[in-house]
Image (cartoon, rainbow, N blue to C red; front, top):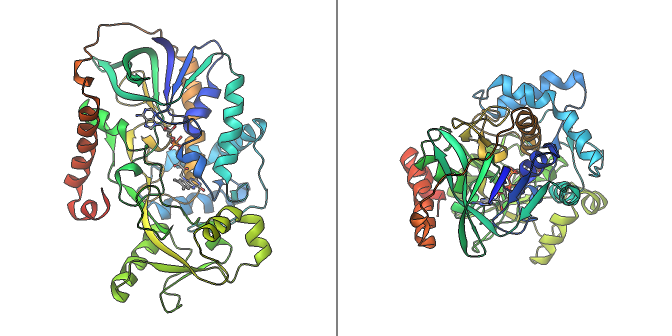
Length: 423
Ligand SMILES: Cc1cc2nc3c(=O)[nH]c(=O)nc-3n(C[C@H](O)[C@H](O)[C@H](O)COP(=O)(O)OP(=O)(O)OC[C@H]3O[C@@H](n4cnc5c(N)ncnc54)[C@H](O)[C@@H]3O)c2cc1C
């Protein structure tokens, strides 16, 4: 197969990049599950935006403070400067927002746009409809990238697995938009098929990384020890008044502090009270507000036998987000020519050591758009070379080795932490 641009991933980053590419470019998008099954589609709380120019400094400072001031300030500014353009694009693509700006942990103002508590689903559904109209874009579902084809520091394409067949795809440019790493963790809000494949490939090919070990643990997953993805109880519910309490119903932490601080307070409390969860008390939120703003969370609790107004919601911390990733510029450029990384896969320095709530959808969209613009201005023709496919013959062994590559890398960085959280 041959294409001008190969996009790996159908989340917000992949979709915005695809929609931003010139219609003259032949684009192939692949995803390793159904196209709707991206972490972007699960986003509940919303997407941050610059509400007003008077909020600029405050938004900047909130992002830096959450990131422990390890953020790249120029990258943060680029994200904020381009936020309203992205929102206008989303509205143009048919996304409907509720326009009653909300607030989440670490934000000092209400600046988050949302669609009830299913913002990601609303956005990705509308973008996928738009994508279907584009004649230059072909989408293959259930198709996995196994490896990249890199020669002399230039990316020439990828090896993919489609319908049981392993084949090279030669591409002028390749965009990695494969999301994060949650599938490697015991408890995570992420889909299990989003498991850091790009990072295994990057480690093996010496592609420069940026803080792959900066991983966010979210304080409020719905308590469950079942295997598979954990349901998230969005932080925005705390923005509207819910508070975290211990087993006796006592509040022990300011529920709106950044995620890492709240997580630590919960872990300390669990040790002190010898339990594996704490609770969320939503009694401060009027019932009508709950139904209108958080129908998904409310309904999911009821389905799990929890009535949020009679019982408190049991919660526990778990993996949620990767701040680091493949080192990339705001245009997605990596250390390999013609290889781009965007969205959660990219480590741009925008989040520093800890991501501010609702900055991820924004980051994914803004930098994906800049990446598409850069590619439009720097088109490359695909080039075919011979590729040895024998390393991929035993596919499960190959994929297990990739998984182990990332696990070992992380455990080497911080054994104690990763022994606790990784699978
Ligand atoms: C439950 C939940 C709630 C969230 N809420 C919010 C929120 O309210 N606001 C906010 O800003 N952020 C939120 N986030 C984070 C945000 O949704 C994601 O970080 C962001 O959308 C990442 O987008 P992405 O396009 O980079 O990757 P994703 O949306 O994760 O998409 C990754 C894509 O890559 C594909 N893929 C992966 N590996 C391969 C492979 N080897 N071959 C082929 N395809 C592959 C996947 O199938 C998928 O299509 C939330 C995340 C979760 C999990």
